[in-house]
Structures are given as C-alpha cells and as structure tokens.
Length: 565
Image (cartoon, rainbow, N blue to C red):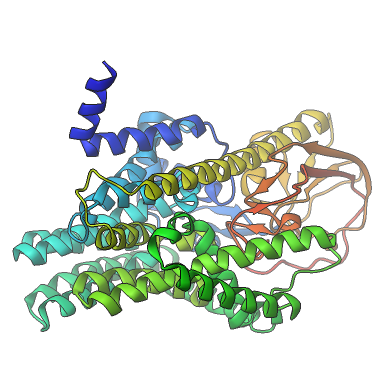
C-alpha cells in the first residue's frame, strides 16, 4: 500500500504539491485574525451588502473616524474574494482561511509550471517556494498578498507561453491576469515593465504583442474613474502619496537612511526566503561563501557599531542586542546571496529567462527597500517563486541529473527550511491567538453596568475588542466618562496614550505566546509586518508574553487629532 501511494504521488506531482500545501496549512486554519486582516474583512462585509460601493463606510483605524477609502491603501479585489468566500464558508477564521488555501495552492502549482520553462527540476522550485517563511506566514492571513501573487505567477506563465507559442489568446489572458493582480494589490502593476522587458529580451524588437499590456492599463483607468465617481479621489494616486509622505518622514531619521534601510531589507530578504541560506553550500563555491560572508560581517559591524539601525541600547540588555545583531548579520548575508544569485544568472546565461528572474527579484527588493512605506515581509513575498526557480535552475546546471534525482544537500536544505518556516508560522499563530485572548479576557472581566469599556490599538486586538462590545477611542470626539475602564495593549500599533491624562493602572493582563520566537515584537527586534517594530522579519530570543494594561479613566488632555492614516 505504501509503495503504491509513493508511486502515485511521484506520477502525479501537481496533486502531490497541492495536497502537501493544504497539509502544511490545515493545522493553522483556526488562526485568529490579526494585523490588517480586519480592514479586509470589514470591506468584504460592506461588499456583501453593497457590492458596488466597497469603501462606502467609516472606520476608526487611527484613534479617530475616517472614511474607509482614506484608511486603506489597497484596491478591493481581495475583499470581493472574501465576500464571495464568506457566502460558501462563512465569516469564521476557519472559513476564510480555508478560502485562502486556493491562492496558496495556485502559487505553488504555478511556480512548478513556470519553472518547467527555465529549469530541469520544477518540483524542487515549487517546494523551495512553499517552504519559505514568508510564504507560510502570508498564506495564513486574509490580506491581499497571496491572492495577488497567484494572479502574478499565472500572468507570467501565460505571457511566457504565449510568446513561445505565438499565441495571442494566452497573451490576452496574461493581460487580464495582470489587471486582476493590480486590482488586488497595486504592486501588481509592476508586471507591466517586467513582462515588457521579457518580451524585448526574447524577441529583440517591439511588436503587436505589446498591445496586450494595454489591458491592465485600461482596467486601472476604469477603476480610477469609478473611485473618483464614488469617493471623489484617485485612490491609486493616494496610495503613491501615502508611501511618498512616509519616505519623506523617514529621511529625517538617521536609522531610516538609505544605507540602514537597505541593510534591513537585506535581512528581511534573507530571512523571508530562508531556503536560499540552507542551499548556499550547494549554490556557491567555498571561496565565494568565505569572501562574501566576511564582507557582510564587516558591513554588519559598521552598521551595528555605528548604530545605523537605531537599536536603542536602553531597550534591552547587551546579550539580547548581541543576539539581534547576529541574526541581522546572518540574514543580511543570506539576502545579499539572493541578490547575487539573480545577478549571477544574468551574467552566466544572458537569456530572456535569466533577465526575467533577475528583474523580478531585484525589482521586488528595490521596491521593498526604497519605495514602500516600510520594509516588511508582505513586500518581499512576490520574489518567492523567482527565488525558488533560481535555486532549482542553478542546481540543475551544477548537478545535471534527471529531475527525480536530487542532491542529498537539496533534501536537507528543504527539510531545514520547512522546519524553520513552520516554527515561524507557529509563532505568528500564537501571537494572533494571544492578541485575541487578551481582548476577550479584557471584555469578559471589565464590562460592567453603566460604564463603557474603551480601548486603543489596532490589528486583531481591535477586531476582537469590538466583537466583545468595547469601543475604540475617538480622540476627535471622545466620549469617555469617569469610571470607565480603558484598555491599552503594549505590543500594538496606533497608540496615542500621550493624549490621555495618565490614569492609574489597576490590572495587567498577560497571555503567553511563543517564548523564544517572534514575528512582531519590538522588544525582540521582530517586525515581519513592519520594520518599524524591528529590523528582522522574525527573531529568536526572549519574547515577553502579550501584555494589556487596564486603566481607570480620569480625563483627556487638550484634543489633538491623530494623523491621517
């Protein structure tokens, strides 16, 4: 029976990859909503009732109420997908996460199909993508990133195959998928220059194939016309302005200089696609590893001792800082290796496929490091399939064997990356669960007759506090009364407690999470969803429990409206 199963799996690689992807995520389907999940769920609930007006409601996402179109920086297609999914699976955590298994499977299978055009081991490329920390963590959110990547990968597939077959139907389908990617997340528009460059490198001349790139441009134009008619604003332009304004503020901070940001982006790249680090002994000569590692250690020493990264020595003891710095150095070296892998492919092969993969990786890195409002794992995610294909492509050249025969080191590398990725996903799961438990405990313990329970903070904490009957503070129109309880999470975003007259803390709610690994915790140096919280996508070390402080309300200081989100 076992031998029959093994043969069937080997004969059906797509089914094997699909089942493996589902098996990886099933234990985590009950993960509570967290980070920006609530924004997408609220928009989906609006769409469920009013399909033609996705952002036609108000939301308190910065301690004051804003129109939803002013609080989000993403187009609504992922929210439409959530609304459709909820019609079949419901609005529960398990239901919505189950719906997002489909995009994750589509990315893995798409990576294998695309890799088949560029290397002899397409299944290895797909597995390398699956077993990346950034893929696993992103696969268990209900945000737009994995859905955008699914459209992205299949748009590239049909573009490549359309050019190979001279099939304009495939090119038109690719243009449609580019439009869907861009309407899921604005970064999807980056496919336009990427696929234009691939076409020019492949055919060496312009042609009517370029016409199909007008499809996504037309779709984006129609979307902007619709949003201006609905909300009076160009939402794509607003997203660009939002990123630009944060970049301008960052320039005023030495820890956000281009050099420091680039260094953090290297660490995020190395950690998010950690499989490249485990494959490094197979990918590079020993001399290259020694020289590259030495150079990276030197750069890291300059960054650390020059305090380029802005790690505050008062926030943690020297052993914790040393551990964070060692992790930054290791993952930054790995991130540099990922970029070098993309560059080496172009130098050694110079074909259209090499240019496609290199521009895919380098373009994603450049955006995540220097164009986005913050470095985060969600911005690194789009390069994951390209890195997986680059690894398989280089191994295929170095070990020219049949596809079913892999070097022993490849199996070890995949296993090591899978273990790390599962640990990171588990830590993110426990973080989300602790956030939900903190909110539920606060609501169950503090609600009382005649007094309102208030809170500040966002992410899943806001979602579950509001579900429990608490109200988010609106600093523009505060309604707090003496005797009300006020709850403030320690590890969260959107905290403006300086606007509140200091109250007497009467209770501290603590909920355990992963004690040795964090994805979002400033004290540990982890900031997977935003490097503002830490220079690492995930960090090993001492991780405190999730803490929520309960205050007795006294009064407000003179009102100051928080900044527009």
